[in-house]
Image 1 (cartoon, rainbow, N blue to C red):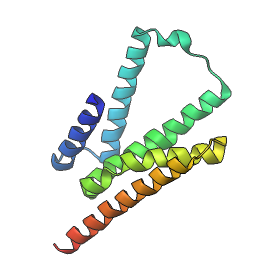
Image 2 (cartoon, one colour):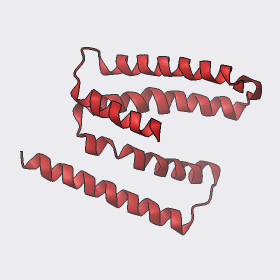
Image 3 (spheres, rainbow, N blue to C red):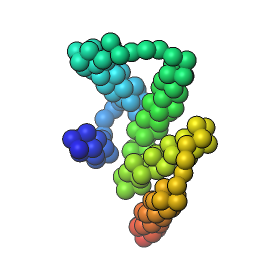
Image 4 (cartoon, one colour):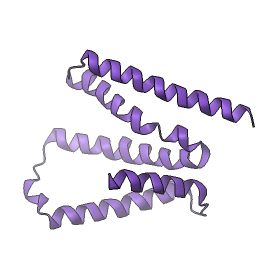
Length: 140
């Protein structure tokens, strides 16, 4: 819960606090610092004892680095500066649905009727937020 609150406050702060750093450079520095601190915490907690490299693990890690961090987070930082926060916040609802679809498509994971209903409900909510943004921006 603390991480969600910190992420939300940081997003709001960075939306309205203008800095002279390029968005991609800022995202890079943030990711490097966070990665170093998480690695240090993992070492302190002894998690390196459970590290076992496999081909699937390395490929998954590479995918997350490229698409989850470099493209994903940098796009998020860019979007914060150019789009309404209400629209940007919908990533938290859409990303898990994308993960479910990829799991179904790539790993043959099951999709139940409950999951499909929930995904439809989430997409409907995101569409309402998008429509609200469109209506409020057209009134300006």
